[in-house]
Image (cartoon, rainbow, N blue to C red; front, side):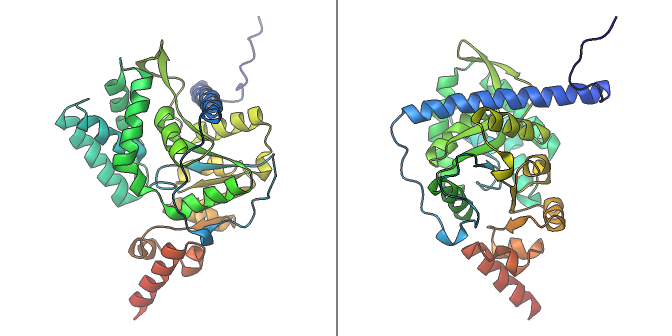
Length: 320
């Protein structure tokens, strides 16, 4: 008796299962993103965006191109550090969990800042902790708390240079989406506060508006991000070859490779190497000392006024 077609027959059973979970996570995230975007459009206008560096605008957004959009990774691309860790700090302050869990969150955040890259085990542990913490709480409650946590811990960590890139797309009449492994509710709060279109994020299961402690599919990470962007582009009628994507991490190479205009922002070593090999654009908005340490040439940061200038000065001092 012939077996039903799965859509992934060329893969081994384990890879087929992983791919199916990525597709499910991506499609669930795209559906949640479109729903939240429609809700945002029905609300009053968002607050004026934070002041950004005009000199950091990209060269290519075409005004009025309805078939183009921009997709921004969040952690260390739009915002310094990881959103889920800052969210954990805010929940601890509100007595959602004990000091022991906060210590683990703090260690993971310290590792993220020192290494400059995502550690899969740390990120998975953080997500598991977050799911257990929010289980039984209402989605609306976490959204409201997310607004407060953004003001307390996240607003001052937005990179002005990346914010300027996003604003350039908005000014050209294009939609701009965050794409992150952080919970979609928190990502949506950040997108709204920055005046963006919406967010693709990890979807936690909820029944009757209450979190169950489970995920829909898997965390929106790596290939799942690419699937989410692909699903959203299809639903929105976009042409990926005319779209742009921005990220700091080599884990997002699948997403960056989908679009016609990939950018490496504050890149880790693997992404920087990959981007140079493929002549992708690079931008670095970190401090001069950090940029010098990872070997960013002065020209790579020329578009980022503060970051590029500081990097050039740091390199000059090293040589003398």
